[in-house]
Length: 257
Image (cartoon, helix red, strand yellow):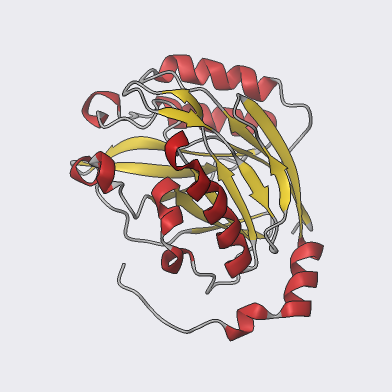
């Protein structure tokens, strides 16, 4: 169990529906990391961009295999989402791959109806928390950010991780809701977005960020390709939770998955 967790979040310009080019791009970005970290986080659908064409672009193992190789070579866990086909259905699947090759995944619960994601991808049915180096990490994808009940900290997790393709026109909501999720759940909150234009002409300006359990900024990326680093500490969580104890007053409820 580690009292700290060092992370690197890579805010990237994604080549549209081009896994080969994107893997090469992230090879370079990962090789350029300035320090050893415990966890490297990539954006949502980092191999393709937010595409509604999984019939042609769903990963058949190449990119997941690449993630396993990168995790082993860097001795860092690697996290990010891919389009996946399974049992005749497509999923927007968030993979968390450890250096030992252990794989945990979360299928996006809230498909983005505004873009027709619900017509192409099946919804996930489980809330997924990874236990890595003694840290409990809740995996979430983009549109999930708008639904606080699903992220409610009933399990005393330590951090939420959102990977996203969140457009510039609604970036104020992204920035505000990341802080809100951190504050209301008394946990770290990490949001990793992309930059640039996608194949549909939508513009993304990043604003990836890491926030502590009081909503204060630990690290923040501007509107450009950028890698940000952050150190999460158990001391911070224990101090704020013991002092304020807000989670003890949380409501007890259940919801249908």
